[in-house]
Structure formats: C-alpha cells, structure tokens
Image (cartoon, rainbow, N blue to C red):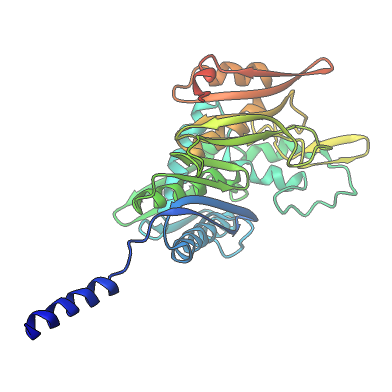
Length: 343
C-alpha cells in the first residue's frame, strides 16, 4: 500500500512539473539595414534568435552588394579596372543579382539597368561628390553614356567561382533598385524555412506578406500620397496583399532643386537624362519582391504610356500607377487588380 502511494505521489509530481506547451503568438522585430530600416511582424516564437539570424543575413548581404559599404564586393568591382573573381558559395547573392538583373534588363528594354551608378554619382545621388550648390553640367552626359549599359558587363562561372568583367574600367554597378526587394525576399524565405506561415516583412517600404495578421485579416499596406509635402503616414489608398509582395517607386521624396531646375534620383539609363516623370508613383505587386522593386523603378523611367504597355505584357504581376494628366492626378490599375481585393 505504501509503495502504491509513493508511485502515485511521484506521478503527481511529474505531472505538476510538466511545462505547458508554448503557443505561437504575433511578434514584432526591427532594425537597420541598407541605409534604411526594416520591420517584421510574424506569428511564431523566439524573437531574439530570429532577429539575430536576420541581422546576420542582412549584414552578409550588405558586405556583398552595398555601394555605401566601401569594403563590399560590389565596391571592389566598381574600383577595379577590369574584373573581379568571387567564390560562389560566399557570394551567391552577387551572382543571383547579376543573373536576375540580366532578365529584368531585357524585360524592361533597359529601363532597369544596374550599370547606372556613374550617372547617379554625376547627378549627386548614391554618394556622388557633386555639391548640390552647383548645377550639373549636362553636356558631360554623352561621354558618361559611353560606359553605361548592362550589356557592357559580363560574367563567367568556373567550378566554385565566378568572374565579373567590365568592358570599360569606368563602368560601375549599383543594385539599389532591386536590393531592398531582394532583402525582403531573403527574410521571407528564411521565415518560411522556420515554419512561419503568417508574416509581414518590410524593408525601406518594400513589403512581402504571407497568411493573415493578428486579427485574422489579410495584410494591408498603405500607398502614400505621392507629394513631397505629404507626410509618410498620409495614405492615398490601401493595398491588400494575399501572399504577395509590393514595391513602390517615385521621385517625390528624393530630389533637389537648383538653378530653377529639378533633379530626381530615378534617371533614364537609356538616355542619361534627368527629368521628372508623369508617373508620380508606381506600385507593383508580385510573388517576388525583387521583381516588383525593379519593375517599379522601370515604370518611373518609362512614363505612363510606356510603363502601362510594359506591365500589361508581363505575367504574374499587378500594378497601381498614380500619374499626372494636365493638372490632375489619376490612378491606373491593371485589368485584374480588383481580383486582389478581398474582404
């Protein structure tokens, strides 16, 4: 009898010590990357460990493809006279950006072009040396255009490494028009491998979602009013995202006025000209954020008619284009955009 009582007491103690299962909950983390900020909300566990992994991933990306990081591999290529050789295992992001950008360069007829970096610098963007108290001497643009063009960059793969080659020593690369979107995809894919089915990932305004928010609703992003005088919280309209990414582009925040002229940061890489577009804001929805990021930039370059013709030919994307016509602001949606609107 005593032995039975002891066994029952032991079982009781073991049951009392058993931990209750930890339930997944919605967590938020954030930080800095690529000269901007990131914010992530997801349903899961262990936010400190997840943030540590994400910060490490984004830091590796920065050391590979950031032009602001003078120790990055892309900076090493830009400073080289001819070529640079890199290990595939350590620089898989660089190689993928080269390949993906080649497809997007063709898809946009050169409106998306990572070789545009010398033009950014000439006009005083992207860390350029131009003092914005001086009007850029546009007569120099033609000579700069001699070494602009993604087709002037090539790469070859040799077993465990790849070599990136430039035709002209003055050619330089800048993936800033695709990098934030690609970073979003990296984080989203990481969360997927961790079994996360509900998340909202944002880096510098570029977004990718999956599942639903804490209220059980489809994630919603806000399109800001494309006006330099508008606040960042002034929303023009909501964009509902069901397992989609969205990237937006516009010239209404990053520009400067000098000598009665306005210079904007999105430059036409096919002409080298710097002029305001009639597309005030382009928001592209896609499964992959890096594609949306690149196409949004291309839309600004092409202008309303050009971007409308381009995006209607590309499968798997939707768009919301805010453009100027006369003195009014109008909005164009791709034909099936309304199908994305869910209750």
